Image: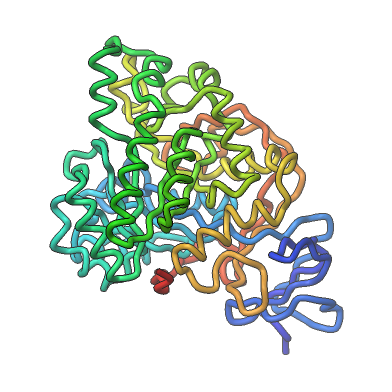
Length: 443
C-alpha cells in the first residue's frame, strides 16, 4: 500500500521560507510531507532532479468569456492554456460572458459551466454596474470573490461603466460582506477631454492608440477609487496598473489608510510602446502599453513592494476582431496566459528572488482574495504546483492552447518551460476537472 498519492523526488522547491532541496508527498489533495521521502512510496512517483517545483500561479484576472462567447475563448481552452503556462487557479471576470455576470442566475450559470469545462480550480467575480446593484448580495451569497467595476466603457454594451454613485454603493455592500471591489481605473472624462484637444486620427495606428489614453487618466481614476474606499471602508484591488503615475496614486491611498492592493500584468512588464507598435493589434490593450521608462518603473515597484500581485488579464477575441487598418476599431485585449509567466521568469530572476516571484504570482493573490489552502508550498496546503526546467524554444502559433492562435508573444523565446502542472496532487490533463472556490472573508 502506498504512503501517498504522489511523491516528487529531487526537485528544488520554492517555499515562503526559501529554496529547499527536499522531497514532497501529497495525499488526498494536500501536501502531507516535505523532507527525505526515501522510505516512502507513492501511487505516482516523479523524478524531478534538476527541476524547480514552484507553487501554481493564482491568476485572479482572466476573461474566458464562457458561457455565451466561447467562440472568443472558452473555459476549456482558456484553462488548458493557463495550465500550460503555470496556472492552477483563476478568477474569471464577469463582463465578456453573454449575458454578463450581474445577478444570481448568470453567476450560477457560469459556475455550472466552469464546473463542467475547466481543468483548473476557479473563482468567479460578480459585476458592479448600475444594473447589478440590486443583486450584489445574491452574488455574494453564491460565492463571488468580489465585484468588478469599470470606470470607463468596458467595450461590452451590456456591462455598463460605474459612476461614482454606483461605485460607492457597491463599495458599501462589498464592505458589509467582507469582499473586495476590483476596478479598471481610467477616468473617462479625462480621456474625453484629452481627445478633444488631441483628436486621434481614424484610422489610427498603435502609436495613436497609446497617445489617446494618457497615464494621468489612470492616476485620476485611482484617486477617486481611494477617496470612495476611504469613505466606505471597502477593500479595493486596482487591476492592470500600467504606469508610475497610477502607482503613485495608489501609494497616496495607502498613506491615507485605504485598504488597497495593486496588480500589474505580464504584458506591461514585457512590452513597451516600441514593441507594441512593431507587434500591432495583437498588443492592443487598455490601459495601453507605456514607454520604456514606465516599464522600468513597474519593475522597480515589484522590487520595492509597491505592486502586490501579477496577473495575465487574458482577454482574447477572434482574429477578425484583432485585425484591420484602424486600431481603434479592434478589440482591446491581450491573449497571454500561456506564456506571460514563463517569459517573466527570465527577466524577473535578474531582479527578484524566487520567493518574491512566488509571492506576486501565487501567495499574495490567494491571500488577498481568501482562497484558502492555495498559493504556497507548505504542509496542509493544496498540492497545486508546477515543475519548471530550463528549456528555451521559440513560441509558435501552433503551440498555443487557447481558442485562437493569436498572441503578442509569438516569436519570443522564454528561458523557462512549464514541464508539468499538478492540481491537488494530480497531473493536469484533458480529463481533469476543477472545483469552485468560495472566498474566506478576510476583510
